[in-house]
Amino acid sequence: MKRQYISVDVLPAWAKLNDVAFRGVQVKQQLVHQGMDKGSAVVAERELQTRDDSLLMIIPKEMILSLDAVVEYGKSDKHLREVLEAMGTFGRTARGAILIFLLMQITNACPDIPERIGISRPWTEYIKFLPSKIPLPTLWGDMEQDMLTGTSLAIALHEKLNSLMSEYEMLKQGTVNIPWCKKYWWDEDTGLLLFDDWKLVDAMYRSRALDLPRTGHAMVPCIDMANHASGDETIALYETDDTGDGILLLRDGKTLHKDDEVTITYGDDKGACEMVFSYGFIESAMQTAKEMFLDLDIPDDDPLKRAKNAIAGAPPGFRVFDSGESVDWEGPFVWLICVNEEDGLQFGILQSTDGERELEATWKGDKLSDSFQLRDMIRQDSRWDIFKLRVIVTLQGRVESQMASINASEEVIQTVQQQAGIDHVACDMALKLRQLEWDLLSKAYLKFEVQKNELLESETVRDYLACSNTEESTRLLEEDFS
Image (cartoon, rainbow, N blue to C red):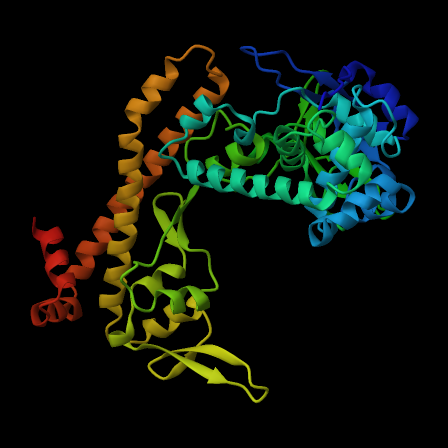
């Protein structure tokens, strides 16, 4: 659907009309850089100090877009209510309700729709201030997405696009029989709604939503114009006051001069992959990927695969993260991969008093609820070093395969970089992500190598490998002494 845009120069008028208060700050359009619309920024209009000027913005609670707000809007807006109800459970979640609301505002303002759909609200105008281009990978072209090949984001992006397509199809199936939806969204001749529109409202939400204290996930107009900076570079904090209004506060000890930018943090601990995925940038000062999630799968030839997946209770993978001087990992799922029936893992079927059948897992006779509990139970086993070695070898192998994926994609990357029309901002972002993730993977590989060699010196492991004629012992010895 066609969107309309308004310059942020007009934002003060919108703010005054809707009782949004700016105190010593204003929103300014940032300069276009390398053809990229960098959106807006909050800047100081004059010198500001915490002692005298701590309150920078006040956003009335009526302007905060949350699940409760959308539900309230639906009571007086027949068109919005019809879509919310048609989407069932999805329309009763914060994200689902807000995405539907944003889509309704775009529909309401679309110049190609001759009749008024829904009720015009302050948000109908506000989204016209949002950038014409949002740099999230879900909105990148095929060439730019190819630049992510080999990174952890490539898998996450593929899954996200599939999820968005499922939601889009669910939206169509749920609303196609609503007369105005059929006419203006889905009809072959008069329908205007595209998958790109659904990706757009998702990008609006993900890149601008805040976890607002006492409110939850919400979009807060004007505060969401503030850009991200981490650590000491974070200038302001967002909060909810006692009346429910959203407020922007200058951090203690901060002083601003005229035209200095007011920044907030989107999360100092977020890794490079998440920053690109959710916000469409990597801070220039970021020197580490911070963390990566690598997927794992139980081998198909494991006879307990289905049962293990059923009781896992954890994501199928592990997180590698930078811990300062070194790297570390966490992920209980891997312990399920590395123990089997002969080690003491057993599964059975229990029948409850009401006739229901359920899967029961045990470790050497003790009930096991999920993979989180398994590690602690294994730790007490006399063969702990053996099980830990299996885990380290599995993790190192997965890290090695990810590094191989990055290496194997180098030719693709070089080819894409030479294509005409490539978005160089997205390209540079992808290249930086690749380098940061490679560096983290390299450190993790070396760390696992050290741990593996230490475990191979364990008396328990040596006795096990010496007495065992298994494929595992042969493989471990070959890896150690090749």
